[in-house]
Each structure stands twice: as C-alpha cells, then as structure tokens.
Image 1 (cartoon, rainbow, N blue to C red):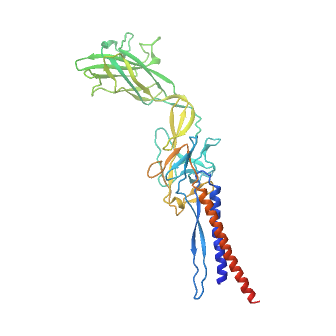
Image 2: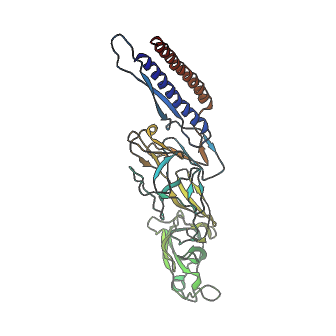
Image 3: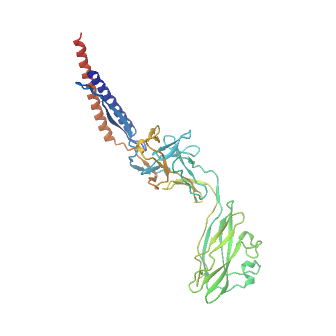
Length: 424
C-alpha cells in the first residue's frame, strides 16, 4: 500500500498543479477582457488514515475560486454607452431566453433593433420610466426589468404643464377705466403694458398667449393691476381687441407701493386652460412695481413641438435620457445595480457573466450610490483584474511543482519495479 500510495500522491499533486496551470492559462488569455475576474486555485490536503508501523501518503485537492470582489482599473473611452461600476455591484443582463445574469462587463452597443448588448451578446436590463414617475426596484429579485431599447422612432410632442412670467410694471402708468379694461374685451379696450408668450397644446402646436397688464387703482399703501390673458389666434383682424373669444383668465395683482413687491395677500399665479392643451398655472411671483419701464425679467414654459430623438446618453445615476433635436431631454430607463452578500461565491458562466448560487446568497437590487451600491462611471470600462507578472510567476511555480510531483511518481514506480524484480 505504501508504494502505491506514493504514486497516487504524485498523481494527485500533478492533477492539482494541472488545475492551477489551467487557471493561469485562463487568466492570461483573459487579461484584456473587460470586467474579467481572476481565477485562482487553492489547495486542501487529503489525509489517509494511518496504520501502525507504516505511513500512507494522502493527496491534495484543488479548488478554483474567482476574485469577483476585487475591482479592476477603470479605463475611459469616447462612448457614452460604455459603463463601469466603481465599487460594489453588477449590471443586470439577460440572454435570448430571458434568463438574467450579473456582469461587470459594460461595453454596450445597440443591435439592429436598438437593444443594448455587451460584447458577449447579453442584453442590458433596466426599469422603464413613464412620464415623470421615478422607477422603484424589486429589492430582493430581478422582476420588473426589461431589455433597454434606445430606438425612439416616434415623434415626441409635450404639452405645456407649467410656466413662469416675471415682469416689472411701470409705477408711473396711468389708471385704466373699468369699462376699458382688457377683461371687458371691448373695441375701446386700453391697457398699460402688453407682452406675449408661447406655450404648446397636446399636438405640439405653438399657442401664442397675449398677456395684458392694466393699472386699476393706486393708494398710499398699494396698487392693483389686472392681468388678462387671451389666445392670440382669437384677436381681431390686424391684432388686438375685440377678441372673438373671452379671456382665458384674468387675475388681480396687488403691489406694495413702499417696496414694489407683491403683497402677502396678492395672488402669485394665474390659471390658464390652453385650447386642446393642458390646464396649468403661470407663476407670476417676483414681479415688481418700480419706477422703470415695463420689462420682462424672466419667462419660460415647458412643453415642445414635435421632435425626433437625436441621441441617447446615460447619467451617473444610471438614468438613460433621450435627447431630442429641439434640445429637450426625457428619461426613458434607469438601470439598477445588483449585488449578493458573497460575490466571490457567484457561479461563473460563459460570456463573463455570473449566476447567484446557494453560497453567494440572494440577489439584492438598488440604484447606483444607494445602500452600499457602487457608482456608475459613464464612458468607462473596468479592466480585467489579472496581473500578468503574477500569472507568469505562478506558471513557473506550478511547472516546477508539477515536475517535482512527477519525480515522486517516477521514484515510486522505480521502487515498485525493483520490488517486482526481487520476486522473479
């Protein structure tokens, strides 16, 4: 049993070193693979029970582990679709069959249908964003995710939902008689000041609003001003009064004559219902009443005319935005970051992806930078964490150890041959 045990020990050692050489070969082969995690062989002894007066040599068993939790360097590229996780966690990707996997390989390009795939052909997955509703994760699983598609072929038209208009009305303006106020919509209507602003209806048509400011009263304490808003399309031929439809709305602002600001009791908004569009408030706050000419100090309204998508880009929180030709940005997806309690215990699969295992623990999902999840680096790729110098050193060590084990086997074989010759 002793000589046979020596030979088996030598074979066990050669097998273990063969396994180590295999991991070295795989590491060297993948030293330039984006997001690859180094494999290494760890050895454990196999002890055989001993009998009295003799020693039975045991063996060694090789266990392959992956340094999944060790991060590689991040190299930056020129593509805004390249992504890297800086810290804990993985991107969630899926195959053609709909199975989900975890990966650190973030080099994504669109296929012919606009779906984002990485180098191994796995689809990047994320949560769709509808309107202004922020997505929520399924914290303990990968449900609710779908393949990210960057093709947004349809034209996008957004009706106005909010606006603001800040002006200065002239302190020395004359008071307009009640019968001639713009709200009366008479041919004789007069006003102190006029401006216009553009908003959008449901179809993306521009709607021009005529905004009239008229001084109504003035006392030693305050001054009232009427704000009347009309649809410019309803104006009389050549523009102005009378409009063919009543004002969209009127409002009375009250200014404090001691400081020129709106009083605390004054309204600060006016509600407008745009024809074939939305109903929204125009914010009039921060308007002033000063001894200066009428001036529009700030004006803006959201919404846009029909526009197509020019390109897409990721934000650092994982939100994917569609950029329209008119300059508008709309969030369409947000990608999550997934992690497990023991990343080094994940099961590696072909294509540089990983599956959860019993030893790794269950998947936990969150967004970048939240709850211990890593941050997303847009325009970056994680390099392999393989060090070629270390691998070449390990290869030489393994080669020498393999040779030594083969000599043990040969020595046992030679001794056994001598023993056989003794009984001839």
